[in-house]
Image (cartoon, rainbow, N blue to C red; front, side, top):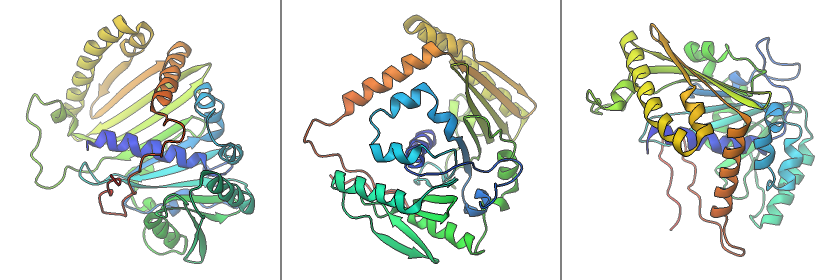
Length: 347
């Protein structure tokens, strides 16, 4: 599977995970609020993608409100208290599945939340919510998949992710092992974030697998191979979404090559979209693309009309993919333990 599709798939999974966790104000540039641990100290060192989500701002957007219409009542009850989540993903390249962790911070009632999760499991017929003790903390295992769990770190913080990753995180809580804070380059990128934005992300891209043949000149991937790090900011204001992306390459010529590539796609697809979907085509054609030395900047804005179109498309797609009444849900792949590929779904 290509790196881009892996990233998108895993990000979507953890956005949903955050929806089932309860929290309040999270880490800001000035440090963590009283009673909370800096989330970065709980994230294992092998993670190379960090995302910060302003949850209160997210739930105020119309596209979230549309997407949450079918959300179970238990999840809605829990998500009301979410303010921010820090999500970490370990990207290992195209041949291995990523793993990740969500750290949420705030004020919540553990017995109440556990009760809501157990009630939801009974309604769905997914089984018992089991528990496991790891490093002195009670981990609540997913009734659907025991490889995923949630642990309350304090009355103000919780962590959710794959069990293997939670073990590493809880070890860090007891000062065992190295956290992502040992990755100065990634942390410096992440600390430039604006916590008032809807979403902020920073990543260091993994090197190509050993023995992989480099892309040849003329192959679009050849331009992208020089990309080393990137940061991403997404915000919602005045009914518009703004997206700002900055990437850093190893050489200035690589940055110029990427800009040339993006501009060529902008010309090709912008014209096509303008003919088929004028408002979306206008967004693509209005994208600002530039480079300076080894840094690339791309920014674009999605207006209210485009957001409504995208929201409607997502709603239509969900209706098409919804199983018929009484039909069994399709089997999902089991999340991979650290360093292994994901197990296929049962056929």
